[in-house]
Length: 129
Image 1 (cartoon, rainbow, N blue to C red):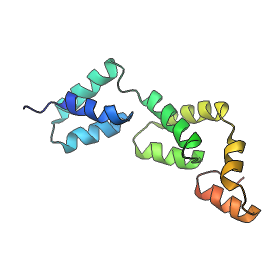
Image 2 (spheres, rainbow, N blue to C red):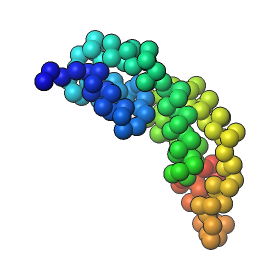
Image 3 (cartoon, one colour):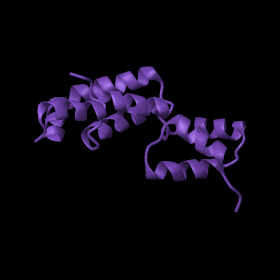
Image 4 (tube, rainbow, N blue to C red):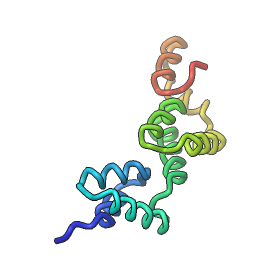
């Protein structure tokens, strides 16, 4: 069976939403040419399967609410996934308006003394507040 970059990309997207950079890197690692990769990325964007803004929002929301990661850590992870800084800031702003961060911080530090709670929050990517 002939390999197809679009099928490979769709297979990756079946498991979770991904950034453009992630798709590019994965397709390149499978041996596809730059031209094949760019055509595939363009096709995926046209069909709405690849959207860094949607990806950043969903990643931020899940990281904060499910994985209890702070904004600093989320920002770093998205940057490493190749998402544009403006998109990252926009996603963080939207999610932080929707989610009660204080509740999350209380939830993950329950039972810790103040010093340990501050250290733990800092390690989880919440600022030193």
